[in-house]
Length: 438
Image (cartoon, rainbow, N blue to C red):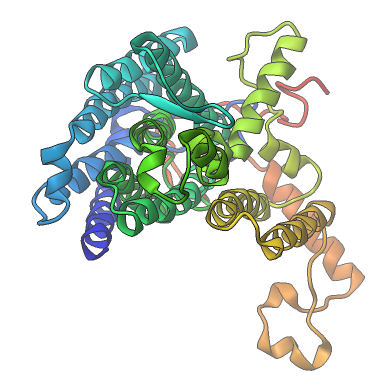
């Protein structure tokens, strides 16, 4: 565990320290597009944050290769090298897209090629435990197609949800934390070495997201762009594919009996693995809804709009920060709920806790404008925004907020996002009408 924590900290430190210089480079390189109709930020903000995240990934793999215990992962498996190859390719495509806005079909082809590169180097699904049947060995073509499909779906799910400051990196960090606990349990508790690469990938992924989050929280100073969102999506998919297709269900030795009975009984254990998209269920739901919505309108599934889940949260009255926290809450509930169920599926307390927390989440969704107020005797103990104000003061503050939102940002002046607009840009359009069907 100490070596995993050291790898995580090194990855986070490298990512954090490089993000500042990368931001300056992105401004100089012009990777700072104008505000689009579907954007929620108010000022051009540099992209290319994925550059720092990629070098954080490289630093984490390099450190792990020189540690006593983790170095065995590189000696016994080619999966870390496969991950690095696929990550380098998808990162390069993302950098080009952040700068030149390449076509969506070209990006899709690049994602499939990156997945194919990992498959060629051994990072693929070899078999699947199917309830009532047992372990089903996959042919080379079946394993390749399933691996490529999982990689492409996961990458695009993460990419689609990257619409608010700190949203994608925070949600993936939560998913990686839950997946790390699961993979570490299989590797350490049951002594299954095949789970070690997935555990390492999850630790490095957490470090990449933790190191980037301080620069990306609202108001963001830099965006990860496609170079970052596609990268962390690929790393998350690689960990799930590694442990799903490499760990033999019989190696767990949890039950005595036939292979068919063992696999049937261990289905709860494999829920987060057979369906890695349950860990990122919120981004996946957003992806599916976006494809259905755009196809229904006769648009391309890759056409951008303002119909994503985080846009809906803003439309019903949630603030930027609260919308992000609500998405965090649901991601943590689903990821750690699946983790708890896989550990002990017979416990009714787990099911009851998930139901109660789901009710809490629904209540948060239905109270977008609710702001808790402290009683009069405790007002001096809480921040000003939680103190009671008169109706006139509340109306004045609301009017000031509306005027500030509509006020354009002058060129060459540092604004709320900490970025500097190097060129003049036109007046901001009314994003409530532009680019939407309403």
